[in-house]
Length: 295
Image (cartoon, rainbow, N blue to C red; front, top):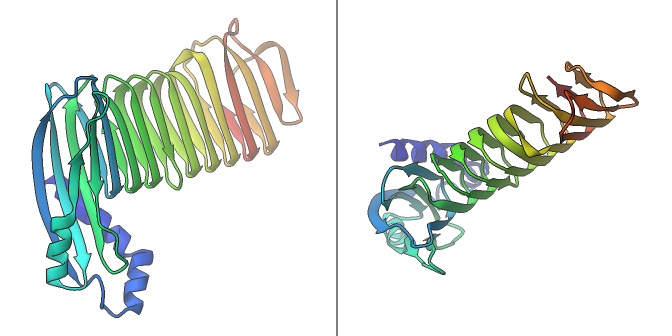
């Protein structure tokens, strides 16, 4: 099963990082025993059409399908100092159903102890029209196939959105943001990670503190494009025929503009302004330390 394979890959990568270093110092005293179990169940779709999901540790995947209920599959994986402790920790991990204001809330509860580790890998299948709100602390978020509003927030883990028609809000603190084949108003934030947006139809507001931003746009929305990074490159590919106002600026870097701008246009001193076609929605790109490429 793909959920189990993905879970084991995620654990392997995590255990070879800081956690693996700590365990080498402790000579296998904690984390020496591993256990896992699976759980699956179905729930009726919420009356409000909204799903709120929180997973503190582990990968979360939400898929929109042609269905009228919600299916949840979970793989629970733990490590502890003994086989008995590992089994007990498995029993203590809960997926709690917390409905509120007509919305369905699913929250993973994992007991916290320094010498015990628990992860839950979730795969949730929902009706396509569901409003999806997912938050995670340590784990990747994947959302696809939704025809409604999507929100994804992760503190330490990438967030990936694909095949979504609806407004999107996506944010990570220390990881990559990526979207593909999306339509609507897209807001993307990352504190330390790159942002990659491919095949979008609509407006975009994306910024990161440290990382590049790469965008390929298939159709420009009325609210335009705003891309900003403090330390990184910005690359924007526009459709062949587009009407827009262009405002590009770099503080320390260069601007490569492959598009013909109509006058009045200003080029020089790290600034390029002008119009594409007859002008229209604003395209505003900013970087403090890096280059800008407009194609």
